[in-house]
Length: 283
Image (cartoon, rainbow, N blue to C red; front, side, top):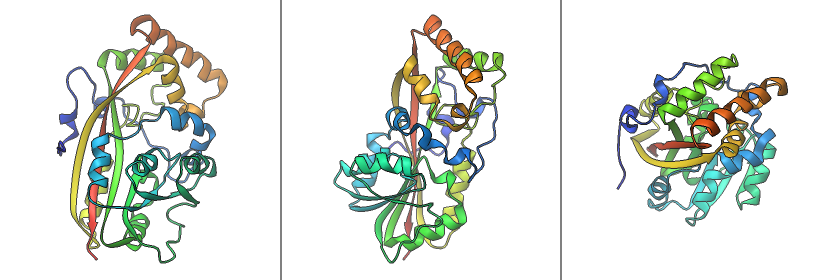
């Protein structure tokens, strides 16, 4: 049974620190060089970025959707979960390096930005976008959604919102401050360092679009534990960490390693909340 919550503040216990109370930050600009840099570390991205709660996948696939368009499919993390449930998945991905990994998993992928991609008359039962919709121009994106969906087809926008124990978060914040990197990737909800107000905006844009109805918001909580090595490999899949000069990254990562191994058993325990904003095409 889906746990439906409208306020992400409900999603964390006292043991975990909600991302909105962390340091503020500014997202990487849509369309910037950093925004299309993920393919530099495609293998690590595929291995260490989180998948999506099984209940969220069931929520999508139990509605009978079989032909699915995956917008910003990346390395196929979401698409592979849908493939395993019997869906046929076409991915649209602007980075050929990321697309290569998705193709290896069995997805068909067309390399293009979603704004420039041409449906060419093709229609889909559902359109999904995992951890990617914030990279899409929302006005153009919603027009594409309406074009690509069959009558009464559905759209599912997914994100993982991360939070970590307050003791680990405080220890890592101290390391970042010591290295003058306190705003590094401060926008990343996956790292537990971002803000969640943008999801309200995406939901409202769908609600006010006459092409869509039945807007809903559902969440499922799950957990993943990272070793120190896994956490550092995870960090380089985030644009601003990846863009650090070696002379800055090496001492920062060494200090993170020391903080985790000396005081936290070399582990980062993450609570992830998979958030799904869904809507149904009116016609």
